[in-house]
Image 1: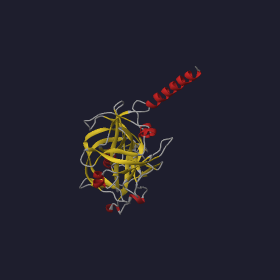
Image 2: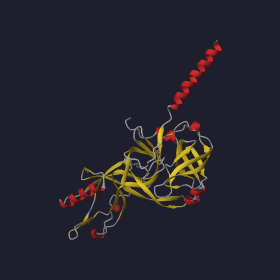
Image 3: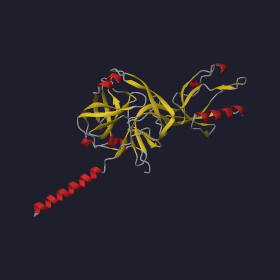
Length: 336
């Protein structure tokens, strides 16, 4: 009798455990589409300076301005983009007032006067500053979550290499077309040459962290919206798997890979999956992993297990992937 009760108790506990595990699986629409990412700075970034010959060789870099500075105010009035900056400077010029820019520099806030040369004849002006207000890149969609209309892509953060200390948060997602591919070589990873299509807006970016770029989508580029289940780390095994990605125009295709190593991680971390490209057609086109593949979803046994994040520069046929459970755990969840 005791043995029978013990068996029933064990079965009950196991059943509860299985139910708990099953709750961790998500039903997602798989990605693979090439996308254009535009991240907005909260201000305008100085990318470089130039000398204004008409003002005795005035060089802003010698008067307190540096590449990487973020302009957030003109004469105490906030600006968030180039249009607003131009408008405020033009207003100050016509009002014949001085121009004081508020700069953010690695956590410090500075007030810096700017000299501007104005050409009365041409009605143009020179600031000595090269600027931009957004960061643009190409990547791949990993998944769409129809339950809360959110998406995840890239599998790592998108940062400005000139400002590694500054991370943009919000922006927009657009369709993109792969026009050509520069093949990878050991020591020199290749890249997808793609055109960003701002006529086709996909979604709004809400989060940019080390596990990906996330947000909400307002349209899907794909007609096929079959749901796939996500896999836990424990379900993934060494051996054959496949990815979805684009190597020409907007056509999402399936390519074979071989998982060669799996890191068992008890907390969120990157590079959990190591794999090699085995698909001959993909190798002929790319010669391995190329930039722009980041975010390409990885599948095994019909389940979404992760996405491509990095390439080995020593062996460009070898890539690394992020477990899907870490990506979802650190994603933007609308409504929370």
